Structure formats: structure tokens, C-alpha cells
Amino acid sequence: MSAKLTAADLDRLAASWVVREDARALTAAEQAELDAWIAADPRRQGAYIRAQAAWSMLDRGRAMGAETPPPRRWPLATRRELLAASLVGVAGISGLIGARQLGRHRYGAAKGEVRRVPLADGSSAAINTASRIEVSLSDKRRTVRLTEGEAWFDVAQDRTRPFIVEAREVRVRASGGAFSVRRMAEGAEVIVAKGTVECWTAADPARILRLPAGTRMSISKTAVSTPQILPPATVGRLLAWREGMVGLDGETLAEAAAEFNRYNDRQIVIADAALGRERLVGYFRANDPESFARAVANTLGAEVTVEENELRLSEPTGV
Image (cartoon, rainbow, N blue to C red; front, side, top):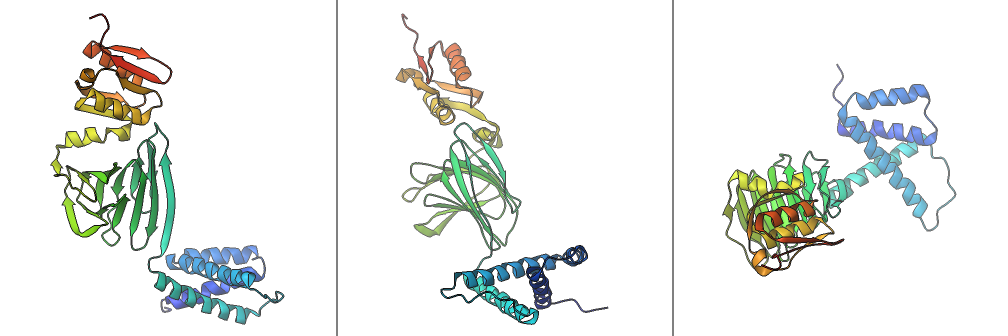
């Protein structure tokens, strides 16, 4: 039985295939042989990709040279030596840079939209209305920048790669679990539904706060609210936006209107301050402000005036 090939052996074999492909098109039999070779060991695909990247770097280096001599065909042995040397160089550069970058992507949801996004590490995100995230995954760390709005993260368990969300100066870290982060005028609001997360600010990284499941807290560079311990039903209501709903349980009409206005171009306007202080309970479709306004009018005995871009709620006239 032959000894198991080392990583260096695989790199050399992969280099020979890449050099052969560069010299001429592979025959059908050679292509089948290459496919079988890669499929026989998961490590070979990585070696083959590294070899392709290294050869591409050599070609790009020659193309970018200030005084590049006329192209010529290198003998296969010399080309393999160059490629092997370049692989060593790539490994050295990778070591200097640190974590290998696996993916960097931007995702967003338009106003009135809730978008669900699977991430390459097995995690998933739900992006709320008018919100944006930037995802950067490496083999050492998973980072998400919440550049606008609000997002929910269901984090795949991986204790070797922390999952960190950045929102303004706030940092939220988990190795698994589920939580939401919402950018505020200053700092961010965090709601933890599952697992435990750690929060801190970039200005004070030594002061780390641990938040268990069922916790809601606002944090900024200058202030940290007292964590609220919430029952599961309340957490579910606060996160009802993931299903396109607005959940109310004692919020004022003014607060409810502000929430609906996040999702819709047709804005709810409260004409009377006293009416805006009325408190409401119920679940409503976030993208149907007119039905909400009519339900409020029926419940509170108010009047609703429907215009193209406005739903005005007011006390009844002539009372």
C-alpha cells in the first residue's frame, strides 16, 4: 500500500496538471483522468485551485512587467519549477496576510422588503426594510458590517471562528445562537433569541457585556441601557418583522405609526397628540398601512383620511 501523499506532493502533482493545461488543451481522456484524480481526495481540489491561482499570478506578473520580453514557451520542467516556487511564495504571502479570505458579499433589502440570505458558513441572515449588510468570511473569523437598518442572524456553531457584527461603534460576537442588531441614532439595539452573545464598543473593547437568550439592550459609545429580560413571546413579537408583521403589545399609536412608516411610502400621520398616546395591541401586515389605519379608526373612534402618500388619523370632527 502506497504512503499517503503529503501536501507538498499534492501541490507538485497539481502543478503538473496546470502546466499541461496551459501548454495545450487536454484530450478527453486526460480531462477524465484529471477529474478522477481531483475526485479521489478532497485535498486535491484545494491543491489544484492553489496551482491555478499561482500560475495566474505568474502570468499576471509577466503581463505587468515594465519591459516584458517576447513570450516564449518554457520547457515543462522549468515551468513546473517556476510554479512550485510560486506556490511557496503564495503560501508565504498567505501567512503574512493571516486569515484566508473565503467570501465578501454585500446584501440589502429595499424599503418594504424583508430579505432572507443564506451565508456560506451555514449561518443565515434576515435583512429588514431599507437595510444593508456587508459579509466577510475567512477561515479565522466571520464579520458582518450592518451599514444601515436592522438584521437578524442565525449563527452556525463554530467556536474556532467568532461571528462578529459591527454596527456603528458597537460590536456583537457569538460562536452560535440567534440575535438581531438594529442601528440606532447612536449605537445599536441587540435582541438575543438563542444562545449567548458578547457586546462591547470599539472605544472600550475591554468592557465586554454578556447577554443571554431573552435579553434586549441598547448600547452606544456613551451609554449602556440596563438589559431587559423578556419572555419568549415578547422576543417573538419584537422579531415579527421577519415574517412581514408589526407586533404591538402596549405601544402607542405614535410608535406604531413610526414602525409602519419604515416599510411604506404612504406614511401614517397622527394629527392629534392625544390620539398618538393611545396604546394598541395586535399583529398587522407591515406592508398594509391602510388596513392598520382603518382598524385604529374603528377601535378608537377616530377618522382616517386617505390620500395618495398619506394616511391621516385624527379625532372625529364635530364632537
